[in-house]
Image 1 (cartoon, helix red, strand yellow):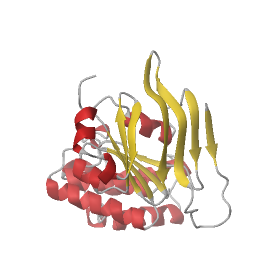
Image 2 (cartoon, rainbow, N blue to C red):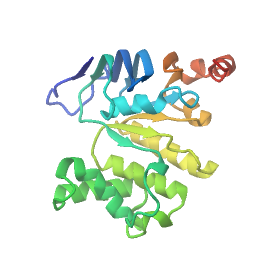
Image 3 (tube, one colour):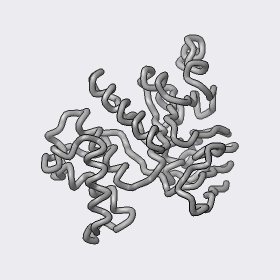
Length: 246
């Protein structure tokens, strides 16, 4: 198992010919329970890649591997130039009852740089303010997280990820449980981030979101069923086979 990072070249520009993340023969899982099996795929820079598949297909595990919280058991994981990824978990992973304001939630995105007990620097505060503004939740900064609607809360969690100032943003089911309008708002924001140079990888059951992505990986039983342009990958027959019982 190998995890490799390209060394920064000193240029702020991405290499258009290089994927931001590349997997080669990647396997991963948990003690006694393999999940991902020999995945070979890539995630393009400054684009939105959708991970699609039934529950248990390995979408969240793949995000965990790329995020660095799950170690591969075999294969190679190669990162292009850039900082470590920022991971945005499902909304349910952050408790509604935690007495956190929106600003405090987004400030947690700086913990990886500053540590949880250090005072925020001017640079940290600028990153937090920029993330709040970019996601349109600056006017909610003093509200309690548990008081927000589902769409507002998801925007706050994405702002927390953005505050980490990574160009690689990993999202686990960012639109699950949201109404159609909130889903459209989130997807428009993600498309805007990609246009600004952020690489977005999202696990999703939302086929509309998957179809609007730049690329799609179909997973079934921990294996790659297909990858490529959503219009070519998300066919009726491919989706029917994907959800067919094993």
